[in-house]
Length: 272
Ligand SMILES: Nc1ncnc2c1ncn2[C@@H]1O[C@H](COP(=O)(O)OP(=O)(O)OP(=O)(O)O)[C@@H](O)[C@H]1O
Ligand SMILES: [Mg+2]
Image (tube, protein in one colour):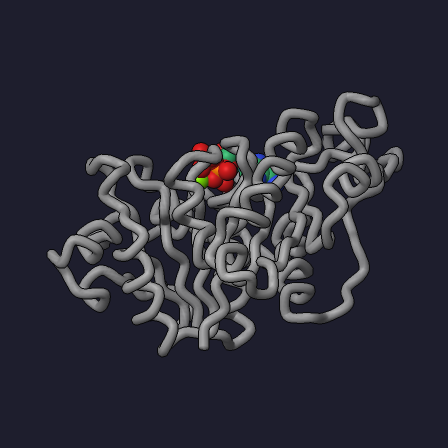
């Protein structure tokens, strides 16, 4: 039985696709057969972040509309054995995804996989609701800004009311908070919300904190999920996040502003 995890946010551009790719990679590196599905019809970002965009032939919509089988559309990751990607289509209209179609795809994957990650589109409309509908757990990606926290709160409302688990009165979708693009220096300066404020407002389990990091941009330019860059702060933070998802107790890192010593100030840039 696969565990279905939706990576969602409400507000756009907060790091969902980056996180879905990194967490899927981390889960697969830990030996779990994992697939990450791009629900962002029309944008198709996940395959770029995963570095497989040139290998996309069929996509989720083709599968749902019966034009291709799952095996034709799934792309095997070139770095990690038990990791697969199901891309979104770039051109079709967003209404091409149907709830019944997604249910069929998930049921077929359920037999084979340990984890199914759903990379949600931004917003709280139809596409985002479809991405979360069948989820067992949700990673709610939030930046340390008022607008992002507010939109995450709206997503928590949807998770509690508009999912299959909610409709059937089953155990609720397990909600996890993932704070991304955290910049302790800017938090110290009062430009951003701090960790405690965010936790107090959203009041759900904190699964990880990913610092603002150049490693993310570098990784996405190279099409190599940042979880592979385990020398980087963001790479390590995603590895920690995956360990917590697997039930391990890992202390939080990267949330405190480290004042730079003289040497790193001379050679290593400033506070950002
Ligand atoms: N920890 C981070 N540090 C620096 N940049 C980051 C970090 N996380 C994400 N980004 C950058 O933020 C931008 C948005 O990230 P991403 O595409 O993952 O967000 P998204 O939530 O999937 O966006 P959308 O809502 O459009 O799907 C990208 O340019 C990405 O490289
Ligand atoms: Mg995205």
